[in-house]
Image 1 (tube, one colour):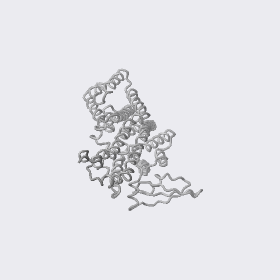
Image 2 (cartoon, rainbow, N blue to C red; image 1 turned 90 degrees about the vertical axis):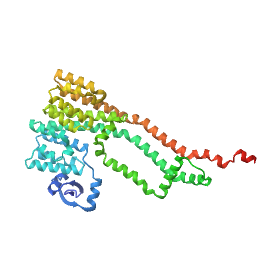
Image 3 (cartoon, rainbow, N blue to C red; image 1 turned 45 degrees about the vertical axis):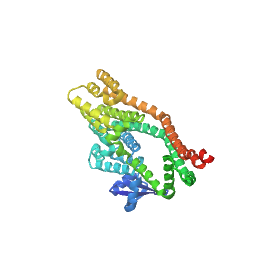
Image 4 (cartoon, rainbow, N blue to C red; image 1 turned 30 degrees about the horizontal axis):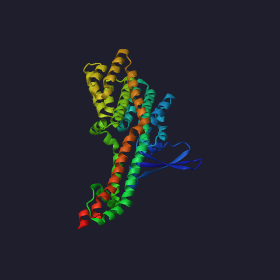
Length: 413
């Protein structure tokens, strides 16, 4: 259920509407972050308005998770109660869904439930790895430290993602301009050429016919252009489900440049998770299983599950890594040798952290150069679009000579 909480400051009289996804008015107040000098009015959003809100509502993001865990760690370090620590984070997150989750977790904890059990209700939001870390933090009495580690790990991942997104801005803008040029030419120039070429009643190239068909569609059925737009929107909206599909993940790994980024990003997250789990005193086999379950890519899931099986059969960690190192790609043997070094020095956690740091540094470099990496592909695509337009528009001109100018033999007769 979606609730709208209108908070009015008793001193200034200013009001603000805050949306919270919850089923209880008291939880809605917590999720809205009501202060002591504010009065609240709660109303339910139903019917068509509810459907619109659900379609346009901002979902839980990595930003929200970073703010939540860093804030909880800071509060717990200062001996603020767990319930109050969660309640204080409501204003730090932006997603109405996350606001409701925070309020529900605070309520469950106030009823005597463990933090890990309360968060386990939202396994799809927090994931197995985070929940395992929270449980280990509760059992060892190091919950503030564990929350801080989660926040740091999420913040590093968020930094890399933002750099990759910023690097994609230039290619996307250029390609959008190219598409707009094609549409404008199809609606202005091509109709005039269609009239010209039509008077000669000659056969036209397939590219020209395509441009004419596109022009007719844009002029007489412009609503059809909404189909690809809706398709792109649906693709972006369901990208999370698509990217989790094992077949799609394997396909991404085969793509040039993209596959390298996907592999390194998944490896960085997986090794960071494994390091934090082992450092939090989670058993090796359990840590490997949880890392496999939470690995972003199917290849790394298979790798950690196989390593777990080998460890349970009595093999050492570095031997298990070496046995299936081919799944890690070109870096497999190098990582296995690092794990052997860690087993000799007794510093497996530090070595795993170092491996994750190396992958994150490589991704950082790629993020800074992503626009340069994608620039050749952008130029190739633009060149193909421009070449197609030139061919479609001008190639019929060379074929019209036979129609416009009679054959020399005909002239003699």
